[in-house]
View 1 (cartoon, one colour):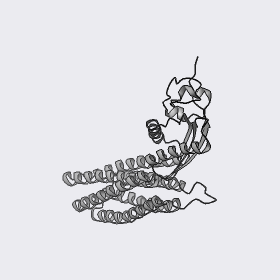
View 2 (view 1 turned 45 degrees about the horizontal axis):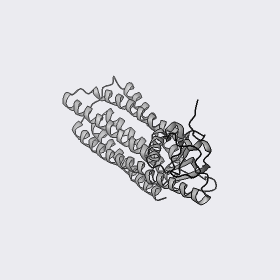
View 3 (view 1 turned 120 degrees about the horizontal axis):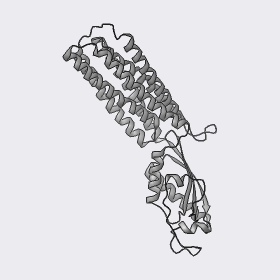
View 4 (view 1 turned 120 degrees about the vertical axis):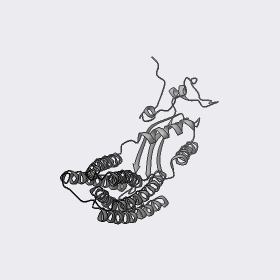
Length: 330
């Protein structure tokens, strides 16, 4: 709940900042009548809309679990990111349409120096806000914040490209470059929107996060307990900032219920210490079987039936398997 409040407060600040930046960019357009600056202002409208949508989604995601939503409301963040990505793509298409439609129309450009300073100022503020969104989003596992942060930073890069183009126009007086800059910016905006949309759909469809799983496998291998004979059927599902983890842990068959539960606690603590507290575990314990002895490196085991043949290195492939591991002989 504490993480959810942090996410909400930062999103509220970013949303208010988006309104301020939009006003500054419209002021710059009023001074210059530059289509490139107008495209940047249009993207800021998307930023504002996405900010309010993200704000609402984080408000929903912060609600506690209830009987209707036993896994919480975290999926609202994925929906928010999907809407944001769609809006960004729509803005990019509109910018390209405007650029093509007015490409051969002459438009007087004025006061470029003032426009450059105003737009450059918004780029700096956008980058700083994006950095804080990405940092807190990674810390609190918030897709909405990370999506918003990436959007803000890409917006910064596109704004800096516009600033460079405006400076080039100021020096060369080649005002037709204004349409070219707007066209290129529109393409970049569409690509950015597609990436955000792709990641949000992956969350909605419970697509496996391969990068996260690889990190988790490495942590498990590096901190393996001798009573963890085997680990399989690992699944990680994201519910916004909450990670839901299922797995089967094979332990020595002679451990009592209390001792087996201590092994689960150790596994849970290891994952939480490395990936944050916003994690929900469902661990099923399996008893080891005679064929497990060949991969078990437990020392001084009075029940061992055969010697250790190979310490099984857990990998992404075998840890996702739904069966117990064993050494096969031909």
